[in-house]
Length: 459
Image 1 (tube, rainbow, N blue to C red):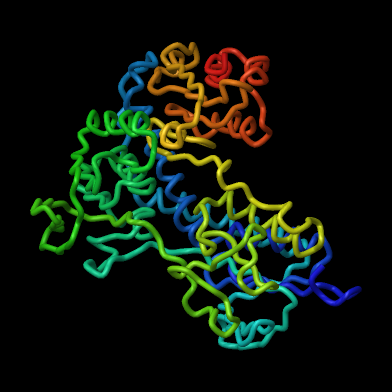
Image 2: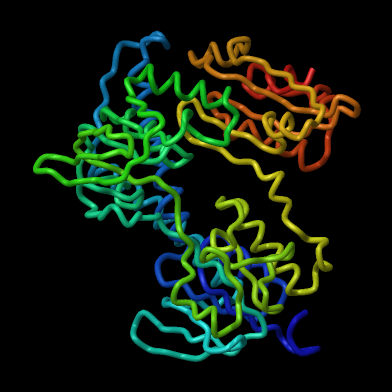
């Protein structure tokens, strides 16, 4: 416990995303007095204004794609059309429901919520600027920073939220683009390619390297590239956008190699920047690197009683990681864990890309193992051998498991195919719990399901 012995620990949390809300609810449950300051939306802007709406739009696009190939299910052809207004209502409804649930949970735990912005006056004093114009100073035993991130906008481009969009301008856009030029071929970029091709847009993807998803398994990236090409996506490889100009009826994207792409709209998907400006970090003596708060294994900053979590911490920008950090911080603050024993193992975090087919992975990557000269056993089974995949009329992709050839311990895995984001949970549990391929193979799973293919990969 960080406060005075026998006294209630007073915690101020700046930022109400997955990290902040999880930390607040756990700390309050453990007996702390918690104040949570959030100036946009409880639940987090990156989470509720980026992650959730993008997946909701992808789900809508997936429903359209399924109906368009309904002939393969023994149905007559169906030609669905997107309704931007109805889609907008769907997104706002999901956002409001999730934010309301988070607020209700915080209030039920006795957390005081301040609608406004927080910043340091000194290491133990936070200035809360309420959105209604009032100001107050709050003394804290502990401060947790979880202010998240925002889309990165390069200095060579001016976003107008009309023709040139960031991700947050596209949920949904006022009109479905006729020809969308996506700048950035990482996770966010490829999800937008999938999303808008599903909606009927022509899409060009500017790929700065020689494969989409740089850093991912080349075999995985190849499956996605093949799907994109099959859907008519124009892949502009080895090109970096340097300028985007707005024309009368669209945009012109200029690349560093001289190539040009004309489209109706351009969308930037080139990463994010941390929301660390305006926090007064210098007044608290907090060290940063490229705007991210540097943290140790306990998510503690350079100042012992100040913690950072979520995107601001510079670790994996995943909501699941942020929530885990928030819980671990609360346990550490309230004396429920010893130093270093409650660390988040980022190497075992599962991640997914919600394209079609979906992509998910966890643990050791095959390319990394080979680069390290590490001996591994790799087994791969295609979905084409699954009865459930044939029932679904979608047999694209595979399941791959990496294991230790001596002990059989599951070290990692990747899945490409329908429901990969759900299926990876089985392999993630095996990686986290140090299970063996035998443990998976001996599991009696439901038939017919896609999951039972995991046992085949473990055989």
